[in-house]
Amino acid sequence: MALSANAVRVAVTGAAYVAPPKATLPTDSESTWNAAFTDIGWISDDGITESNSADASEIKGWQGGQTVRKVISSSEMTFSFTAIETSKTVLELYHKGSKVVTTSGKSVLAVKAPGPDRRTFGFDVIDGDSHIRIVIPDGEVTETGDITYKGDEAIAYELTITAYPGPDGTVALKYSNDPAWSAAPPA
Image (tube, rainbow, N blue to C red):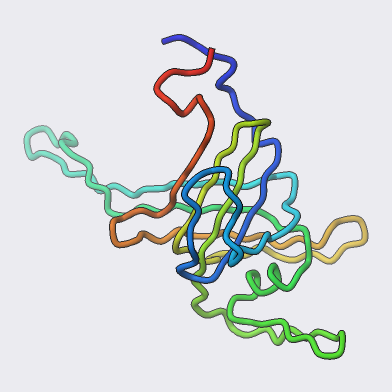
């Protein structure tokens, strides 16, 4: 196997987006996002964390009690990040089912008990000219962190999005213009 330092990527910058359910999805890594998508704003320098987990059940043979097969019993794909920009979009994502209402320049957020709030999400991950776009056609904020109000830190909103499978089992789409994704790594 040939090693190629040119295929080492760093998530230098990027963005997170949200849209209503069933929004028109992008089909590549570089085109402009559909107008239905809203940029979530500044993300903390921790970036975005993608997690994939699977639980497997072991099937053991009677002869010797050895594992002869593992069956995946459940799986999950999540994306976590901390929004550090306070906006209507972020507040409504963090407080699922709640809406910010503004009248005469004054706003109120009546925080409700969380309810279902499925949406479409997307992420851009950029390293120079290499661009990865991740699209979650059906997702939902399923975990939030604590909000700390402190004099020397940005007010931050920790969000974890769970990607749900579509009819064909797809939970996310990843697009890239990165030559490292092709059969041959760049020279």
